[in-house]
Length: 281
Ligand code: ADP
Image (cartoon, rainbow, N blue to C red; front, side, top):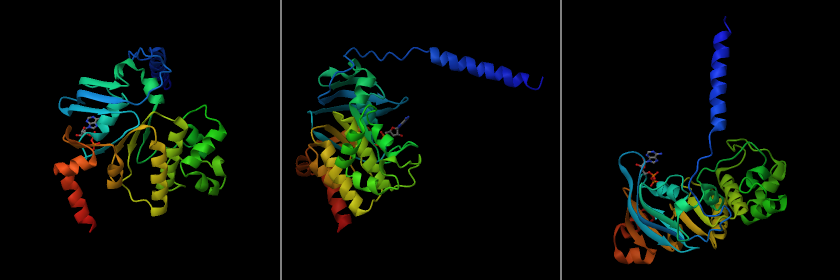
């Protein structure tokens, strides 16, 4: 009698598990072939988006040619991350359209997009696994040689070789045995392994020692070559190198153009620049 409740709730639990296993895979409507190779042209046409009732993004319009770098700047909550989420089709626009290589984003299977887009986040996710496996996560069929080659391009090889077991060093999920900057180098190595057409970067805000910082900058520059890159930029240097700067405010594009154009316009961005120079001097 004591056990009967446990047994009944276990049966109910098992039923739920089986019903999830029986669930059809979500049909995302994508009709382009799974192996479609993305060139990296991205266009937003009057894109608006709501998480709930209020507009998080309002009427975004921009066009990016393959291989260009776009820097998003603006205060927290302006909608920079949400815009990136829409590019990777984590959400669909509430209204308006997004085109990739001239195809409506809804024509792509999510798996096709995910394979060719990589997020490099401020605080990269590490698995409780070896360094090698953590890098290989970028593309599961990468060979050991490809993993090492990617680590070299990412400026991560040297520090990995100094770890107790090199590439076989087991990392904890919180990555406590390596520094924040080294975690980012691993994330960059992972991105090299994935070899995506489109990069989505959230630049680190936390301070990292200058030597590692320089390694990260170099590795990122190399990674961004030939790929369309969207960067949530916290450093003026990143903005300076971008082909297009998009200044966001309250879910809208307040200004966009090259850094030079925005300086000449003498608007919001020009003001931000003056203030940061004031703060630096
Ligand atoms: P940013 O990257 O510029 O800081 P976000 O895109 O993260 O801005 O956020 C834009 C707005 O959307 C904010 O007001 C935020 O609170 C809201 N928001 C972000 N994620 C969600 C979510 N999952 N559900 C509801 N609202 C969200």
